[in-house]
Length: 238
Image 1 (cartoon, rainbow, N blue to C red):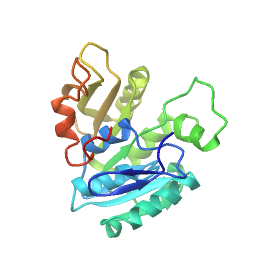
Image 2 (tube, rainbow, N blue to C red):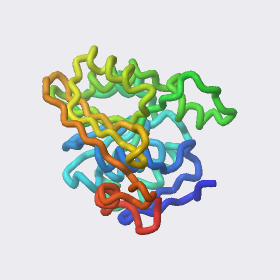
Image 3 (cartoon, one colour):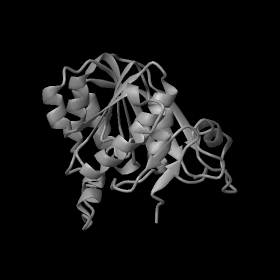
Image 4 (tube, one colour):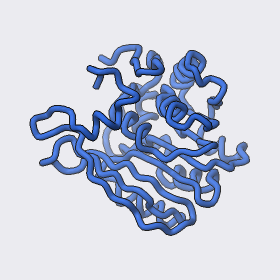
């Protein structure tokens, strides 16, 4: 069972109420996503991505949104108890609601989206919302990111291999161009476990592709992963 609190080097995450706890996906996305001066975190959950971006991008003003009341409660607590509370704004809203009320102008959007669409939904309604695309279908996410970003703005996500083709097709159809493709493996001999994808709005670029392993063949942490998380994780965590 996950602890109610998770300690990073520069902040602590309370995760008593949020359906999804701190995990490897959010750690990877928070450390690899593109940033800017005006950033939107869609489906913030505990707020871990917003706090990682606040740490990485000291000039950024960050807006975080979530539809789940438990997530909002934890994110609000975590933001208020961080050193960056004046740079993070929290909204209890769906993406559709936020798109309708926002003037946009974001130069970076980040989302760790739900991606289960064929598996059985679990009895916990909050966890179901956090995990299943019924709560945030890919077409709505892609369209929302497009509408909220400025021209040349960057859209970062973390998704598993089984939905990568569908997601990439939707992004390409909307007018996004893949800028950076991080292929994440757990160990060298296995196939990809996750993709961290960074798209650019309306600008054609030649994508950079990197294959990254979290652990070595002997299951020890890889040098890449240790360096990536060196400013975030406390030694011994994860």
